Amino acid sequence: MRSVVRSSVWGFVACLACTSLPFWPGHSEESSIPNFSGVWARSTFGWELRSSGPGPLKNLKRRPNGTSDQQTLVGDYASPILKPRAAEIVKEHGEISLAGQAFPDPSNQCATMAPPYILRINEMEMVQQPQTVTILYMQDHQFRRIRMNDSHPKDVVPSWHGDSIGHYEGDALVVDTVGIKVGPASMVDMYGTPHSEQLHVVERYRMVDGDVAKASSALNDKEYGRADGPAADGVFVDYGYKGKGIQVQFTLEDPVMFTTPWSGSVTYLRAANEWEERVCAENIFAASRRLSWERRGQPQGECEGTNGE
Image (cartoon, rainbow, N blue to C red; front, side, top):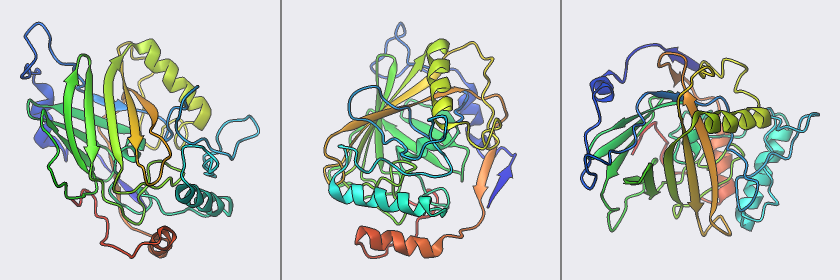
């Protein structure tokens, strides 16, 4: 069960979000960084499907009109990007969903969401500072800190969000994440596609023209349907907004679970509502957590707490 909190829990960053962006080391006054400030929203949980190249899994369960059936999540376990172990886990998750049950995922487990799974959260805000970019998410007080112009430690200690470093390349913020811990409900998408601690995620955040953002969002709405109806689980997209949107392109590498690197993307439009947090209040899938561990052939580990690093 989730409760809605309409308060400024993230007020400590409000003054940062409202100030003008400084110039970063390595950027001249004539070449300022992209400005991602503001609250952004997307109305689906799924990744944008690619027309070519290795990409996200497609839902095998389709509605009569040919679009994805969001009530039954059966990932394409025959996808060539999956190694046998990953394909087996995706297939088992699909069988659970076909039986009318929910397999454990970070959302229903009240667990920390690692990238790229965390991109499923419908609303986010980015706070840019010279040494750090912080991304705030509306669900479960989740946030990520990205160290700018830094390098990964020689020996990364795995954590639920992983170790993220970033830098600017022209009009893009590039975020590189390694060291993501594996837990009972660890996955990279809503079909339960697993990952190992060798997962390497690269995200590229760019501002795109409003027409491009709206077209990408419309295709995704058509494929998946808006989350929980027009209100998108409490998140409202400002479809009348004329400005630019944010497009996030991500690439995953995991030699344990995937046969090849593959890429996906999500697109955010400007949010139409005030910041609205949703908090996971209870966990009703404890027994399923043990099943998830057993399926991976791993002993049970410590509990995943939100932002439990």
